Length: 626
Image (cartoon, rainbow, N blue to C red; front, side, top):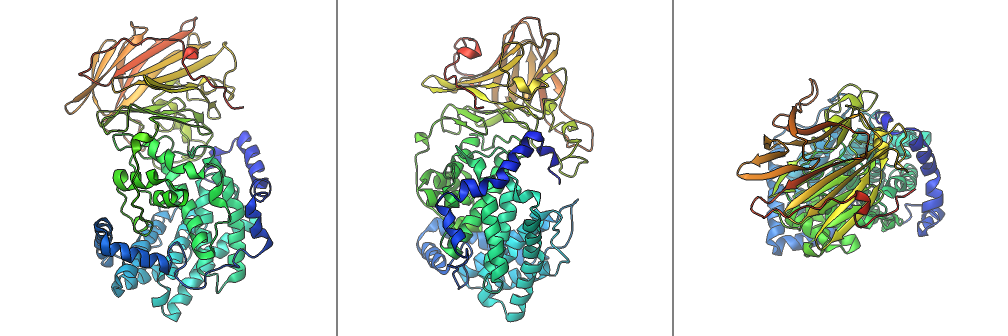
């Protein structure tokens, strides 16, 4: 199991509870109705029925006839499809233990080519999609040992089989259907009968694997009713375990990158159930799922980069499910953000197109995503805003780095304090016992505190203990005590405590205030990573990108100074070219210690004095969850 590092003892207990949750949590709700009848009793008999129906095709063709933006989107897709026509089909070629690259390539091509065919009627696009599917169908297997590969390839052929059903000849149908059944669904059946780990995990594997299996089953349900019914029933039982992680506020603790992966497949599954069966069995009503779009919106900074904690890239990819979520939950802001800010241009952006408008300025500038304990703070919603993403939460969450207390900072349209993101998943022990030895994953590669050069406790939790959004700015405080203790529970007393508070004062300043008690004699290193050019001036450092500048200043103790360090680890780890590590080093005294650093983000503004108060006196104190 490649994610074995993610399941320490407390997680095993949680997973054991999750294993019985479906009968307790889900089927005590109205969705229990599906248990009393066949899940496939309402199966739509015609094709296409997965995500897209003939009614959807009529609607989109009408949009194409009158909406210039929809026309432009379709033409961009046609151009992409034209490029695919001359490219070679996928190959059975693994990268490390994964076929995933080829599965995703097949999936992307099938969606693209089948979409352009259905909306243009030009047979060459269908023929090229069929060639892709027949090639994949001829693979010896879809690499079930890494089941994401199997799930995504099943998804690809299910969509192609369904959307191109009318142009497939009988032999092609049989070949593709047999591959879906034997290389996809039968492998899934084995997993469900064994109760393999991903059927019980609360993370992205659950949604991806259950989503792919569900779409495959619905595609061939006419010809394989018993197998399809079993697969759909098992998937519906399993997926709520993962969807519970959206509660209460829509966040995803694996990070925004895996929010996208998990949410794409959750929506694929729910949309497929709805289009093929006329119901999603109440799954979309699970707590927090309607708020999932808010997390995506708030976690993207004005630089256009995400707060990419955990194993995620700062690059913000498109997310067509934002259109689906907007329509399903009456949230026009989701559609507006995806259309106007992200400007997504995939086939499902066309099928789910939503032209609703919304005023982003009505959205709060500060957000605490409970459960995941992720906080975002910004001065306003313009592209020149000051933005901070700030992490509490749990180091034991899947894909986590040892980064409690880390943050990113945007100002003047640029990212000044960055998260380095993941390293190569194929590094030895990346998901095992070498994980925390890698620079980007251990504490040394984060924008947080380092004590005695040691990693944070990998089982630690860091709750938000204060959150405030007022007329003069916003702030949050996170209790990092457990991260620097052998005990993974948050500190409960004054004997050993580490707190970090971050406050945003409009576009002018950001305060990072740390308070440490009970770690006397330890070497403290405060650190950030930046792509800016750094000029040191004692207790101040000027950061420059192009013709833009911000300044970091140590307010307390004022006699400390900034230094720079290399951010490049030894090969074969990824090198962090162009990145400077800005640090403050000191030995902790016997008495409680406060370190306060302010970032002056507006070089033309008069610097108002920043008043330093104990973090326990900051407004918005809350009682941490138990």
